[in-house]
Image 1 (cartoon, one colour):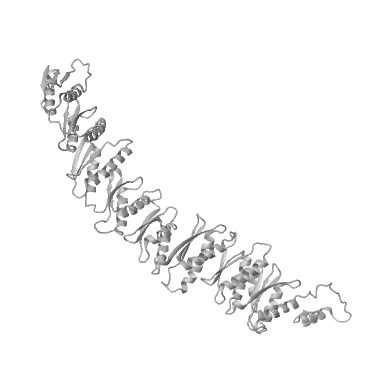
Image 2 (cartoon, rainbow, N blue to C red):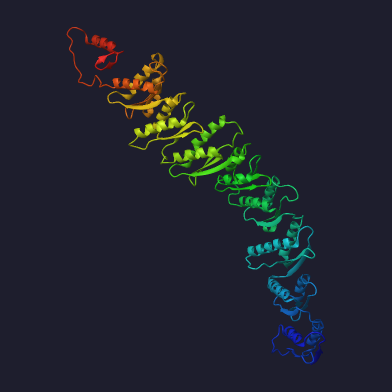
Amino acid sequence: PRIFFLEKAQAQEVATLLQQILLSGRGRRSADAPRIQAYPETNSIVVIASEPDIKRVEGLIADLDKGKQTGVETRVFPLKNANPQDLLQVLSPLVGQPAKLSADTQARIIIYTDTPANLDELQSLIDQLDEISSEGELVTHVQALKNTDSSTVSNVLSQYSAQLAQRKGRRTPLTQVFPDPVSNSVTVVGPTDEVSLMKDLIGELDAESLREREIEIYYLERASATDAAREINQLMAQLSRGPNAPRVGTNLESNALVVVATPADLIIIERIIEGIDSDLAGLRRTEVIPLEHADAQTLYQTLSQMAGPGGTLTVHADSNSVVYTDTEANIQKMKKIIEDLDAESQMDNVVQKVVTLKNTNATSITTPLQNIISQVSGFQAKGSKPPTQVYPEVEANAVVIVGASEDVSQLSRIVSELDSEAMYNREPVIVFLERARARDVAQELQQLFTLQRSNRTPPRIVANEWANALMVVADPQDAEMIEKIAVQLDTSEGNKRVVEIFVLENSDASALAEKLRALFQEGGRTTGNNRRSYYGYYGYSSGRRSEGLTEGEIGVTADLRLNALIVTAEPQDMDQVKELIELLDMESPFSGEPKVYSLKNAEAEAIAETLNDLFSDTDFVRNRYY
């Protein structure tokens, strides 16, 4: 036995620690197990053990017999896998003053003196490192940083280590990273191959000062990190310059991108990466579209609704640019939209409205609206107001209207009116008016055709006062007739003209229309034959006259399906036309039974020819020939 008298440490505490150390790796009932007894009265320890153990106790007591510090204690950490001396080298850089760390190779333990909080933290680390040691040899790398904060680099490296573990199917990372703010360095502990990867990554992260930038790592699944980094750097060079310009590096071993950028740039870069690393990467590309007049953030809400199904759109406020990833066709379409919206104009007045359709197809309505916008843009002064744009939202069956508030309001009303009932089988037709007011003509025609088509769906005629045009949604036959009547009403006095329908009882509408046009055509000539042959395909015949029998122009259109005449005229002329139609619509003189005349002396052929010549230029009215 051997007695050790302690000067500063408490005998009971030291005896407990020695017991843990000497019995580590041996059972208490082992033949060579040492026995240790504390005597608080004399503050001494009695050790009964082999000579080698006695010598170990001497060394341990020399370390443990220190003055007790407030809030400090000593713990023993037994190891299962790790070599105590190797682990001591790994842990030593992490232990500051006045903490004390030592190892006992024979007992396979680590002895640590520090505050309880630090002891708990080190115990967790020792447990992890001891488990990692079962995977292979541990190495330690300490690297001082020149430009970047150690905590920032440590966070990124820890995320990287977790990603490596996940890729290898491990739940716990094998590599641990510890920052040292005092020396601004990081310590990396782990398997050789992973620590080697970390060393390269640290160099990339510490290449320059972060300033206002952050670090993110993106792991690519499909795209090549080298190609992706090159493309992103080229695109971002168009957006950001100066000390805070983004930098995209690569980690080839993990096919990852190491991005150093401001938070705003990180959003852009992340969207670009999504496009590059997708299944459609070969069909899509990214383009930066700078704006000169409009504000990119103001237009974002509008443009995002117009992006293709697989497109990604974001804005870069600092450069006032739009970044769009999509197919080539969709990119060109988006560029055209942005070009129109970016015209030098009062962009503060730009509004957007989405009109959801219930009955009508969005595409069929959008096409004629775009034609109207093009027509109006032709005579509007450039820069007088923001350009108007109309786009179909096919999936939602809606129409998106963007432009000046008053224009958007008018077009929204038109769309809503056109969508008042099912129009899927009827294509819209636009009729531009030069003289008459669209509102007056639309009301006249709508009333006329609503009464005329009481037994089936009437046409829909909407006035576009913005373009002074009519939007007509009707079947082909009605659309042709409405277009012709609208042209007849489009005079300088068009708002004074009236329209009336005359259903014929006896006469043929087409023949009577020809006669009336001949009567009202200046000089007795008619141009109705050519038109009748064209519109007759749809069941109509129409014509107009110059000045002659009436004060104003008379328009006559034949509706063969109703056997009716549709007449447009000034009020003072309509009574005369009405009387004339009534006279001409008498019962046909040929409605009776034919009579046969037997000739005694003259030749039948000669008499027939004479009679035909006699009546060829006459009209039979009220039982008389004229």
